[in-house]
Image 1 (cartoon, one colour):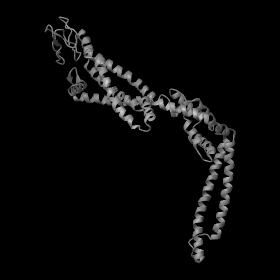
Image 2 (spheres, one colour; image 1 turned 90 degrees about the vertical axis):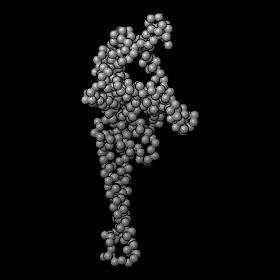
Image 3 (cartoon, helix red, strand yellow; image 1 turned 180 degrees about the vertical axis):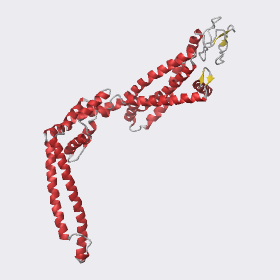
Image 4 (cartoon, helix red, strand yellow; image 1 turned 120 degrees about the horizontal axis):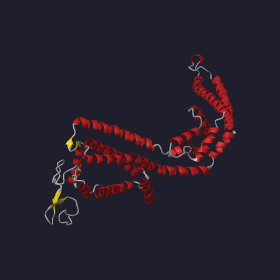
Length: 410
C-alpha cells in the first residue's frame, strides 16, 4: 500500500514537471507556478463572489434581530428607543429609506427580502417624519442639559460634604478650600434638581408624542405582534439551517465546469502530443481540485449533514456533541475509501484505459502514439505486453483475452 502511494506521488510530481516525459527547465516551471498562484487566488475570489450571490438569512430576514431584540427587552423606554433608533439610523447613515436598501438587496442577490420585512421597512421609514425628527432633536438637547446639571450637582455634593466638615471643625471661612458655603451649595443643589425634574417632564412629553404619533403607533403595533415574530423566527432559523449548504452548492457549480474543462483539455493535449498544453492543463486540474476538496469538507462540517447528526445526537444523548467528532473520524475515512475505489474501478480503471489506448495504437501507460509492433513505449519505456499463460505468446496487458489464442487472462 505504501509503495503504491509512493509510486502515485512520484508519478504526480513527474507529470507536474515534465513535457512529453522531458523535465521542464526551472525558469519555465517557475512561470507555471506563478500562473498557478494567480489562478488559485482568482478561483477563491470567484468562490467568495458566487457565495454572496444567494441572499443570506441576515439579508432576507434583516428585520428579525431588531424585532426580536425589541420584544425581549425589559426597558421601560423600549418603545421610544426603537423609534429613536429608526430615525437616527436613516439620518446618520444617509440612507434614503430601509425599503430602498431592501430593494437593492433584491436586485443584487438571488432571492429576495421576505414580505414581512418589506412591510416592516415600510412602517420603519414612515416613522422618520419632520415632526418626529424635531422631537428627537429636542429630546437630545434636553438630555444634554440634564447631563450638565447632574454633573454640576455631583461636583457641588463633593464640595458640600467637605464644607460641612470644615464648619463642624470650626475652620475659618477664609481658610476654606471650597468656593461655596454649605447653605449656598444646598440652594444650588435644590435648584438644579428642580430644573432636572422639569426637563425630564418635558422630555417625557416629547417621547410620548413620538410614541403616540400615527406613524409610531403603526410601527409599534407591528413590533408587538408576537405571532408575526414567531413566524419570522421559524423562517429565519430554516434559512440559517440551509444557507451553508446552498452556499457550498453554488461554489461547486462554479468549480465543476472549470475542473471538467481543464480535464478535457488535458486529455486532448495528451492524445495529440501537445506536451505544454497537457502540462498547463494538468496544473489547472490540480488547482481546481484544491478548493473543491476544501468545499467538500466544509459541506461535511457545516452543512446539512453536520446539523442532522448534531440534532440526532442531541436528541439521543443530550449535550454529548463531541460524539459527532467520533462519528466523523469513522465516516470520513470510509467515504475516502469509497471514493478511491470508485475512481480506481470506474474513472481510472486500467482495463478501460488500456482497451481504448490499444485501439488507438497508444502507450498503455502514458497514452503517447506508438507503432503496433513496439514492445516498449519509446516515450516512457513501459512494457506493452505480458505472456499468455495458455499459449505463452505476448498479449496486451490489462485486456481480458489473449490476442492469439483468445484465452481469458487473469
